[in-house]
Length: 619
Image (cartoon, rainbow, N blue to C red; front, side, top):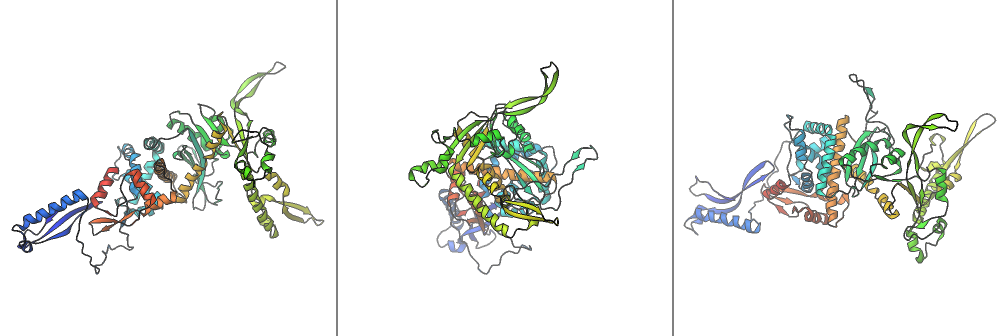
């Protein structure tokens, strides 16, 4: 603070003046009136010296107490400033993203972009664009244009144009593998990455377009190029072209790497190529591949039987060979998971669950281990001598050692029975008004319990009759309560099942990206921009998961909705260019964030220099 007065006036008025800087804007404000020269002569012989002494007292008080007294005049007739814009803008600014920025800084993406653009002539900052597109994906998910139009919501008020965003996306896609590897390496400096188990799964993202991308042949190279956005199988049954994302995460639910492929690609074919890249990232470190049955083909199991790796894959009991299926339903050799005491499935199904003595048994599971080594085509031929002495080339076979762990749960059985009974009720109701033209049996919907029988009358007219298929229901009920995983590990059964049970975390990653970050639908058309869009979504997921992990390490746990809403609500408003006032309240999430990241963003008022100082430390 300094003294301000009109040096040309014969009777100047002395003020204490303070300078402010926020963003790129600087200003000064008179915050205290000391008095007119003539007024001060009544209490001192040297008004100027007295005024300077008052300024020094204010500076000392601010240094000692971090407290400042201001004189503010409120004019209730004053009109708001007209910015000559069509739409009124909010003057509040978000500072909740400071927590995200602290993690972004430790990922050191500034040096990454500096390295890959050092020989280019670009005049914009791709790192700044990437970080605000990432923060927007977490706090205010929108299209790139929508995010660009609301950049003034952030304290820094960054300035770049929409074309710069698209050019940055092009740069990111060109350096896709380097970018993903960089994120993994730097994230390992923030939290210790547990890669002992690597979980893999796939999901689809739809596009609101009328037709899929066409395949074509490159006129110059003659290369066949497959269209990117293609029709494929969607869990949401979206009748729209798709792209497919494959995602690896570590044992803590933090993403490791990803791939984006055409929507018509079989998800089985995505696993090994991306896993090879993961092996390079981990520098050959051994890990357990864990996935559901849809991404556990024989090829994938064989691949993870090499290099010291292992696999734990959900196994469909329905798709087992008859020999193994018979072993599953053969009610011998089952043991209780809690004690290894022998038990039969019949006993598990029939005990009185209302008896308090059976409370623990009701929560328990039965298990059995079945050896299920698998023949695998080694991909080459070997010479075999037949009994008559002739030689013949035959396909060489190798064995994939594996075992299947079967579990049975009474609770799961009853839940599945409840679901099926509800489906039978709906199927019965559907029969009353069955429209033959709409009849279409699906693998998991209620129509699988309806069968159609056709008969031909003497006039060769075909009559269709629909009824409940009780044989199908009886067959379906056989599998109630059963669950299976295939593995080549010899570890304890409890440990193997515990690893498999954590697969829900990768579904949680997809839910966060789709629901909380609004990664779908996607509005880009070009393949490179689509991939770059998901690179930004991936970065947002990584930063959020790292923030969540830092909180968890301190023993605090909140839902993703609670954390994001708190960050989103952490706005401050500029008061007459002199200070900022918080418009958010304290909360458990806010307290935890400040304790973990030590940013002290839990105050009612902030001087611009204080926020600038905090921001400078994390940029």
